[in-house]
Length: 169
Image (cartoon, rainbow, N blue to C red):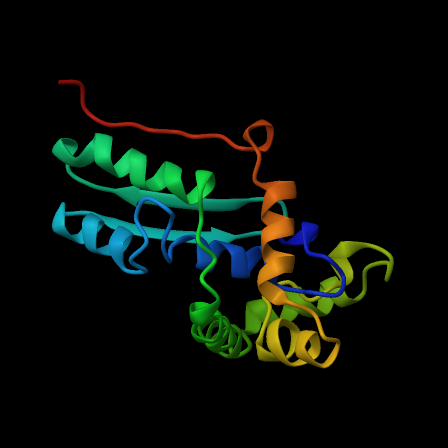
């Protein structure tokens, strides 16, 4: 979740969530997963909260095996394609701009800003153009390398859970 963001890259967990959907070693096309889900009568989404990131999908029973393989490849072999970074950062920036209009989001952001400054709770979590692009570029940071290192540290089997459900055959 976002409380694990490095202080120098607020929004990195959210950015990881976005980038995992955009191709893997076995399924390199950035739209491959969404296309597969849509072809099989499903839907997919994800969200990042303070302590967790949740990915979920629905699809037809006949597509389950391939769907699980495609989903599992997110975590086995994500591409983190550098050519898609700018587009996804702009998508996150748009989400942030939309969130800022929501009064309940603004109240939560105010409350979080009052937390102990040494606590990750006090930091900005969503990410935006400033935190994921402008500042890292000014500091000479490679956002994709930071993403890969963060992913390798946080996306490990001991920290993950998979839940499936459906009708029996």
